[in-house]
Image (tube, rainbow, N blue to C red):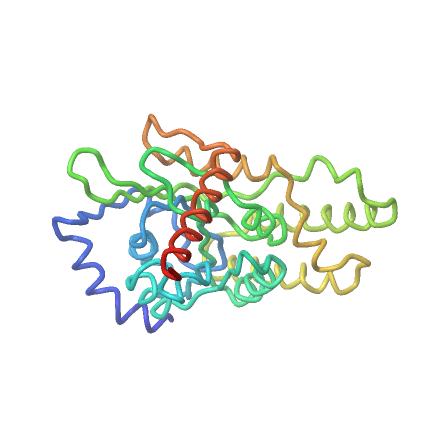
Amino acid sequence: MWLRYIVMRPPFAALARTKKYRLKVEGSDSVPRYGPFIVVANHQSSTDIVAIALALKNALVRSHMWPWAKVEIQKGREGPLGRILWNIFGVIPIDREAGQSEETIRSSLEYLQRGEIICVFPEGTRYKNKELGWFEYGVANLARAAPAPILPVGIYRREGDGGIQVNVGRPFFMPPIKARYERLEALEDRVEERVGQQIDALKQWSAVAPRDKKGMRMIANMINMVVDLLGRQEISFDRFCRMAESEDNEFIRDRVLELLPEGWSKVEEEKKEKKERDKRSSSRTENDDGND
């Protein structure tokens, strides 16, 4: 049981009912009552993680949820609220400049093995209303690596009263991999193909496992089998962490888009890259001004 969540849920729930937030949740019946599973959601504000935690309350009284979070939040660059939530929830830190995808996925697999929950905002940054940003490859790589259900969540401000709406979709599994990277050498290609096929087979078993305590423990054991499998194969963990393809990102992003209102659109990668360049340029300007 996640003690910190049990303690903090009542004041968070009270705040969520206030006029400023007016939290409403649809689809809560789709939330598994036990981990392991992976939550994938769009990102609108620093309060998203609190809204999602309240929406998943039936699971979080039994399993800890570990959000992926960029290290800038801990350093206070996203405001004091982000830093407070970092300490309350406990996170899997992501240093995008250092490129920690292998470490992030390894930590996520360890928590999923223990029957816990991973929460990812794949956009990597917030987007304005009615825009669903480009998804980073991290969540698709994790989804390929772990035979765990993926729970899509859409979060946004309602147009009528301005309250926060959380829509929870049905858990799903990634479809079997269709293609492999042509640039791989023949031996490595065959090894990756074999590993991918074995993981896909485990996912088929996971997909029919019951969503009760026994079934979810079975899924956790299957994740443990994946980790053991890697130790016996001639494929590096780094390669294993990059098995996703571009279609995988779109497959996951479409599942989230289905939970957002009509009129929302997907931001293409080019616009995301421009946004990142503008952000870096703004940061350099602020630093230059501070050194004058």
